[in-house]
Length: 124
Image (cartoon, rainbow, N blue to C red; front, side):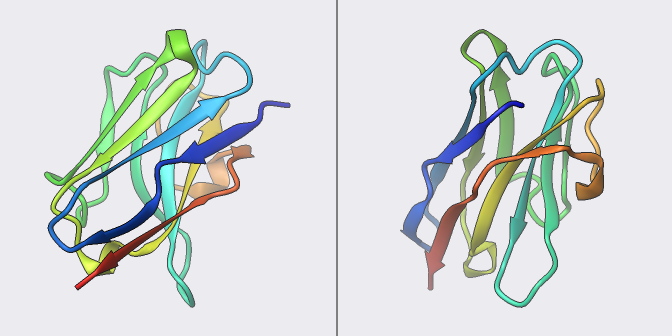
């Protein structure tokens, strides 16, 4: 069972940037798409960004498109989420996830492995 560990969250002012990392205990390449999801208090978990097994295909929620960039380094078993122009509505716990499929998905139920989450708080 793979373990996923997120890092890089924190408190930032609106308009600022953060870079989240997700490191896997085993290889994250080879047939595994990855994704970032977030959950704010009292809200459903929502899709943020996804990436296919080799990084050639990415997908973004409309709310973050143009501000966030997802990437991965399979050699280092790590995935990233570069977040810029942050807004207070981006405040949430951010989770990384892995699915046993080549291509990304927007449905959190398609992912079998999850990290513990990292808090991102954007102040106005």
